[in-house]
Length: 417
Image (tube, rainbow, N blue to C red; front, side, top):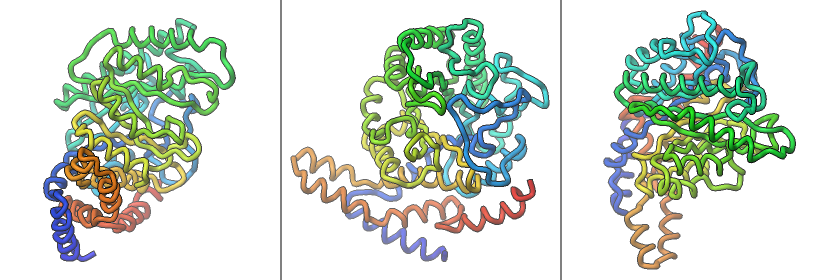
C-alpha cells in the first residue's frame, strides 16, 4: 500500500471525526498507551519447559498440530520478537509458571523461585516489555480434579506453596521492571459429574486463598479467575464467577474476566461497570469461545468491540488490564498472535473514536432516536483509515501486508523446526 494513500486517507478521516467532536490525534496517543499482555502459551500449545513431563489435562486442551511450534525458551522468545515487529504500541508478556528457565534442572512446582525467571526479566527489559505471571495448577501428577480445593491436606498444601511462590516471583518481577506484575490465579478444580459437596469444596478453596494471600506485596497485583467449566470437569466448577466475585469484593482483589469462561449468551461488557464499582481493578483475558471454551483466536467481533467500548465509556482504561488467552494449534502460531493482538487494538480504537460526548448529550436529553442513529452511523465512519495510520506511525505492516511477512518467517524459521 502506498504510504501517501495512507496519509491522505487519514487526513480525510481526521476531518470527518472532527465534525462529530472526536480528535483523532488524541485517540492515536491514547491507543499507543493501550498495552496488551501477550500470552506466551500460544507459541508452544501450553507445554512449558518443566522436566516433570507435562501431563496435559486439568480442564485445558490445545487442539491441532500445525508444524513449527516453539520447543524451547529461545524459540518462544524468537517468535515473540517477530510478533512485536508486526504490532504497534507498547505491550507486556504473560508467563505461566511452567515456562521458567530451568536449565534442564528438575524443579517441582512447590520449589520454583525467582531465579528461574531472571533471564526472562532481563530479556523483557531488553525488548521493552513488562512481565505478568500465572500460577500453573494443571498438567502435574498432583493436579487431579482438585488442587486448592482438595480435602487432602498434603495435596492442598502443595498447591498453596506453589501459588505463594508464584506471588513472590511476581513481586520480584515487579521490582525489577519498576512496574507491578499482574499475577493471575486460575485453577481447574471441579467435578465431571454431579457433586453433593459444593459448599465444602468452596469453603476449602476460600481457606486456601486466605493462606495464599496472607502476605502482602507492593510490586505485584493479585487476580482471581473464574471459569464456567473445564474439559472433563463439566458439571461443577469450584472457582465459579459468583465465588470469585464475592471473594474479590470481600478481599479487594482484582477479578479476571476471561471472555471464554461464561455462557455464550452472557455479555461480558455488561459486567465491566459493576465490577468497577466494587473491585479495585479488572483483568481481562480476551479469547473467542465457539460453543464452548475453545480458546479460538480473538477476532474483531461484536463481543470484543462492545467490551472495549464499555471500558472506554466508563473511562476505565487505567483500571482495566488487557490480556489475551487463547491457544490455537491448528494454524500458524505467529499469525494467531498477530491477528489477536491487532483485532484487540482495533476494538479499542473503535471505542476511542466513538463520539461519546455527543452520545451522552443525546442520552441526557432523552433524545434516544438521535442516540441510536449516531451509534449506527459511527459504525461506518472511516476508523480503518485511522488504524492504517497508527500502523504507519509505528512502522509495522499496514493492512494485510503482515501475511507475507509471517509466511516468510515460516519459510525461513518455523518450518525448519
